[in-house]
Amino acid sequence: MEKRLIILLLTFVGVVTGVCAQGNDFGMWYELGADKKLSRQWSLGVESELRTRNNTRTLDRWSVGVSAEYKVLKWLKVSAGYTFLYDNNMEEMDFKRDGFTPNNWLPSYWGVRHRFNAGLTGSAAWKRFKFSLRERWQYTYRPEADGKKYDFDNSVWKSVKAKGKNVLRSRFQAEYDIPRWKFDPTASVEMFNDNNGIQKMRYQFGVDYKYKKYHVFSLSYRFQNVNSSDDDNDLNSHLIGLGYTYKF
Image 1 (tube, rainbow, N blue to C red):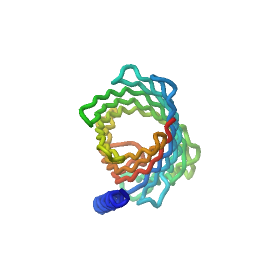
Image 2: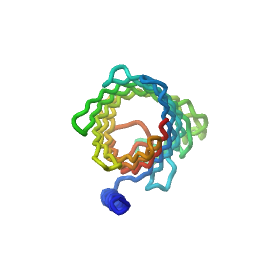
Image 3: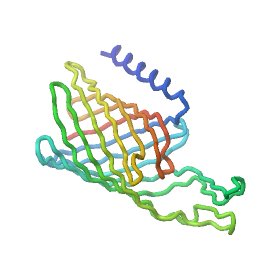
Image 4: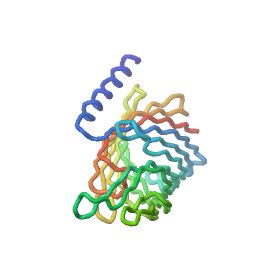
């Protein structure tokens, strides 16, 4: 068992190292959560996350969230949640039409965002496969940030204006239960849509390891392909995720 696990991890790291050499950014996502089943229909969850970017050299954000899920039918669930995000926003500089004269400068700064979501998830099973389709509406609000942007024309610091954004996230996921093997693989593709069309795509492959019913460890690889986004921290990225969830 240990040898098979070592081979799996080494193969995983080798593949990721190869694709990361293609010039996109690389980051780590660390996740810690807990799920509580209240009844046959209701369950609650809490989750915290830490992300890095710039080839893991820079903290990107941390967040903490709560969610609730209700099973309407055997194959259909509804969910809702809230997440508090604290982002390390990237530095920005814009120039006048000549392309040389600076107009506004936005240094890197930490700022707050509030995120709300509601969704529907339908699932179906076939032999040892489980398929699911999740449609999630997501609204993110960024409050005004005082004195973060420098105006070169007037030599003053200005505020970054408040902004709200709606996104529809569509995710298709497949899972497979391998007989007598505790590392169950999952694969998914997720599409982010806003008013301008497809904002970005996220592709993921990973494995979950369940230990003594209550503990779930996860290892995943994600590739995020950004098409067009007004989120300053959105980049084409290769991402490694490490997670732990306690289920009770």
